[in-house]
Amino acid sequence: MSELILKDFSAGYSPGKAAVSGVSMKIAGGSVTAVIGPNGSGKSTLLKGILSFPGVHSTGHATLDSLDIQSMNRGERAGRVAYLPQSPPVPAGLTAIETVLLGRFPHRSAWSSDSPEDVGIALNALEMVGATHLADKFTDEISGGENRLVNLAAVLSQRTEVILLDEPGSSLDYGHAAQLWELLSDLAARGMIILATTHRIEMSGNAFDRVLLLSEGKSVAFGEPEDVFLSGDLLSRVYKTPIKVRRSSPDGGWIVFPGDSN
Amino acid sequence: MKRTFLFLIVLAGTGIAVSLATGPLGSSAPEQVILYLRLPRILLAITAGASLAVSGCVLQAVLRNPLATPYTLGISAGAGVTAGFIILSGIHLPIFLVYLSGTAGALAASTLTWFLAGRGQRDHSGLILAGVTVNLLGASVLLLIEYMSPASRLVEIIRWMMGDLAVAGYRRVLFLLPFLVAGMVPALLKTGTLNQFLTGTEIAESRGVNTVRERFLLLIAAAVLAGGAVGAVGPIGFVGLIVPHTMRRLAGGDYRRLLPLSALGGAVLMLWADIFSRVVISPAELPIGVILSLLGGPFFLYLLIKKPRL
Image (cartoon, rainbow over all chains, first blue to last red; front, side, top):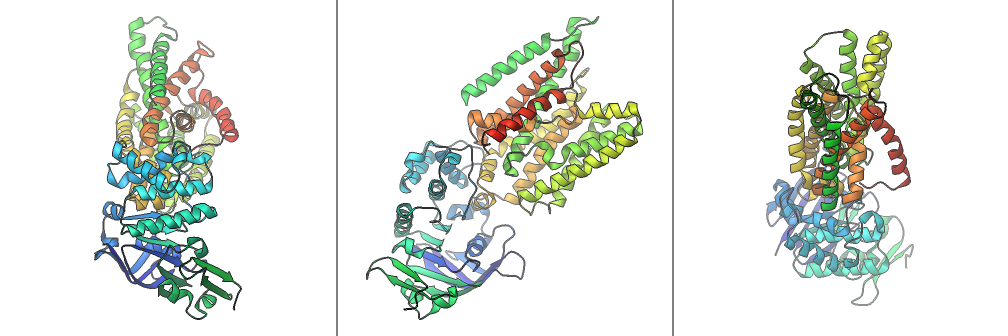
């Protein structure tokens, strides 16, 4: 099973100026990790740093199965790690199935046509996110939430061991958000590593089993949700407001009570 | 796609036939007129049209802007400045060098745009902003050149800016051909990469595209295509805007289909625009740039009313 390790990892947009620093964690396959923290705490930068995007400078180590992710060539990395940004542009003029098929790019040459296998994988990905009905619709004619599902299907069609998601539930309604986190949980159960930033932990049910808490560009806590959420007034200090997080039932999802110090 | 392709092939075929049969023969032998005047003109229209359309098509993806045209990179202004300077100076250059000067100006302007945008490290909006700056700068220099030009040369400059397909022999086609091949081949080979640019730099990068390098290579391909065309026929506008948009409406946005169709569509548009330019006030000719500008205005209106697809 795969293993993603970050060791004293920092990333930022100019050399020597880290937007997020000191992140150390070890995530084994079969795990969903929620990256949480206030706006500007470095959640998105962390994901971009792991992927060595142009213009993002990083230090420290990020390894996947002992291989330095940043030393991998782009093709190799794309075959192992997929990424969905917070607000990707809508590739207008393409149908949903064509958009999902773009996720097969790392597995074929730059100009070849889609093989029946690619089409099968793309249709399967659309089915997994519950968006088969959108297959032939143009992406500039469907809603933001529907586009989110299509983009997620494209990520799934990339067939990688690791998926990095930036606010995957944003713009999704309650039903689709719950379905999304369930899906992430299912994917993890197949041995994948999921790392997802989120502001809405109450929408994620019981899907994640690890939490990385960032504050002002620093890693504040990493561990099981109970350890992070129930650790004194840590969340209140990070979010600078009284905040309480509890399970809805002993095995239930998390409920957030902002402004509640009791 | 097949229907669109066949439709364009029919339009191209009839366009070639009509173009061969259109125009006065004068006192020359008909086969001479066809072989040395009309056929090279047709070939020039086809190659220049395909070059400009593919250039615009590539730029609309790389710059992620539905209004991007070959001239967004400052190509028109650059070519205008060098051509204007040569006309004003009265230097008599070999004809090949005259074409080349337009191309050199176009490519120099694109290079300046690239460096002003921070050598492409910045995003697509940086390149567009730099292109607009270079265009304005070039337009100002060209205005100065025009102001300083005597009337006869001023007319010559203005006439050059309107574009011209009138040829005798194959020199201009031969001039354009290497630029066409040098730009078209990489563009066609990178249609999958262009598709990835539609999803944004970050997703493209995460799928294995070296976005900085690929953007640079594709911009070079687009600049070479447009620069060659501008050198050969002058800064003819709108082909690079109208054609990719129309093809996108007809056949969708997948660049594996869109790019070859745009090449064909550009050739067809230029071919028919040239025919109109020769028949509207026959036996005189209207500059092809005027015909395409008259088409371009309403097309912008169409874009305004209908949501553009990119």
